[in-house]
Image 1: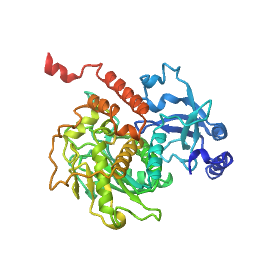
Image 2: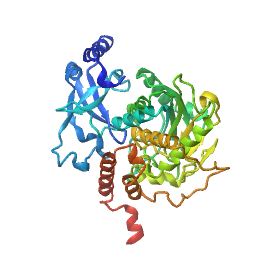
Image 3: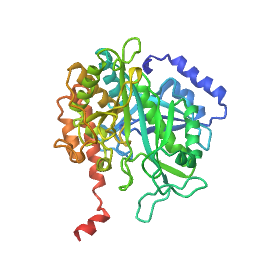
Image 4: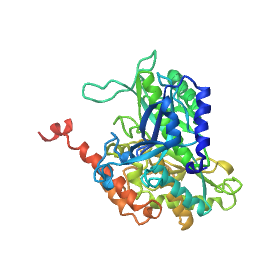
Length: 455
């Protein structure tokens, strides 16, 4: 059910029922999710929660397009030229829960934001962008089922002498010193942390299906179950990232979803699994004519890949991830092959799906999903033909059209003839302006290596 259709009395009753079951709650965090997948909002006393549920809470509407530090760049005239007006954030039904890692009894609720005068959803809200793409899919008779996989590193809260980061020491152990891909020993070593993540996920209703040790030293992946609501899947992904970082901080560690935190280690990816179902919920990729549909979907993803690249790799650091192994740098696809952009896992019938492997973990899940589904929709509705699948490892180094850097990717995104059919060009320009502002702020300072190169 869409959040605007929820009866106001039912929302208020949800809070009152929650408070009866959790009378110790002292605060409630009310927040929205921005273009980077970060949460922005306010912490208010529990005594003021009834007002939140009845009237909403006001804070800056430009928070959606803030950079990774939460700073604005007047993108699209939002945040400075317009006087930085507030929007009204209102709770979304079913998202109220405890914050298990908090040292003080605290609840949280995900919100959507509306214009303060007309009460309309804000067009810069990434959830609105994704909702619109999903609506386009469903209008075309395409019903996506999706799941997200998110990679991260556990790191120390202390910086090194040169301001860098290092792998965290796990409780009762020293820092990991070797890669341990799929190692259950590595999972056991991190069991205290990982178990707390799983427990917190259960408490918050997040459908975590598994956790694994990844290729990098101190790197892990958390997988969410498939759901038939892409908006819900991305909400869950953003909330899971908040949860992982919160649990890590509660244990005197930190977690980073930075795309390439260590140059000598693998990067962090956000992989999206997607299939489509019919009106009875049966997987169309696994049914009669399913292979044709699957190839059309892949072809659409191929067609929109580089136009969408700034969404999948939105930061200066993002590009560094594509220097590593098993990170796609072309439009290649294949069966059971992790070196390509679009992998079709070993699967049959109801499990038949595509794994979109391009985005980094620093990409906002809602915009990433919107771009992935736009590609799928584009390919199926235009009956596009995918390239031949790759046999063996895909070539590394990028093809001729691979975006060379963030500025190239942003320019291509804004001028796309295809992506703008599904995501408003006005939003893409605002997103691009925000990311350009962040980039320009980053390069205002001289990097230490510049002295080594140019003095």
